[in-house]
Image 1 (cartoon, rainbow, N blue to C red):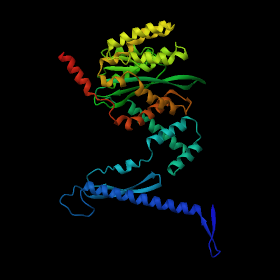
Image 2 (cartoon, rainbow, N blue to C red; image 1 turned 180 degrees about the vertical axis):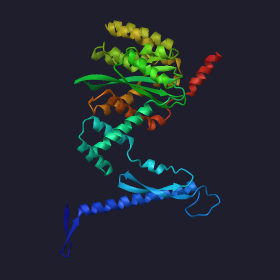
Image 3 (cartoon, helix red, strand yellow; image 1 turned 30 degrees about the vertical axis):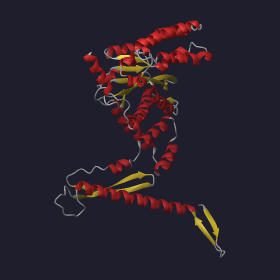
Image 4 (cartoon, rainbow, N blue to C red; image 1 turned 90 degrees about the vertical axis):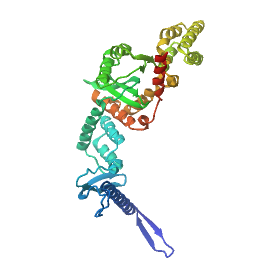
Length: 402
């Protein structure tokens, strides 16, 4: 017990017990939070009834039927709420949702701690610091099982509406298999819907990023309702192009320009990379596809003149794969010629999965990636308009008239 001594002018010593002061303050704060929340619940019940308690009014819609108690964990500690019950209407409050028992980000942290091999005692200490209550080993297990079920339902939900643009990518993670460490791939799809908003379309486990894995993933998306795709954007993954042609033959494929540049740079000496960057960027700065191809021929000739034969061959072979975006509205070019929208998401996934290191199985890897994607989808990322999709309809109308 910590105490501090203070000497007054009269010479008397006053002892202050800090722990008791802190405990008293915590009780005051917790009591205030509890009182405020209960008052808000009462006011919300009055609003639903369209009258105050015991008030006689011709506009009254319902009457009270008592209340039930429930515990709620807040930053101030555990409080007890008196949740009103109504006779006919269902009392659904947004107040408790704002102070949910555990936020999704905290649930992710519990999964991460569990998969990273953090001891149960340590998990209990951390949860006590977060919520003021200790979470036991059985609670962690039950929580993980519940989260896995929720995430799996979200992962297999139906895909509504059309998604003209779809970005595809995969991430390789480590997993244990019979005492050995092997790679497991998690494939991710992000789409832009007709309203111009981004959406996490799907996430699946793949043995490796090959044709079979991509075919299974695209089949999974199509069975769940993915339609209206006009353009797929991705790196040149093995088997992906063939799989797209199998399931979405009418869709175009755009090779990520950034990945294409990196592929060319592997054949360029370090001292000449900056010069080659400017040359490649000049190709994709042209006003249309025809001019871009013409510029590409000049770049190939210049690369050969610089004794960069292999780099020239890479440009000559792959440049047309990077020009599909020219068939779409000019206002969209910058955001559909690279896989950057999904790359930023994947960087966040890599940051979170690095904590675990090696996963015990493929399902654990898939669940953690899906949990993070579900969290991202619920943030401003998925609520902010990404593209003005009216331009696609306008372009299609112009083409049909022509």
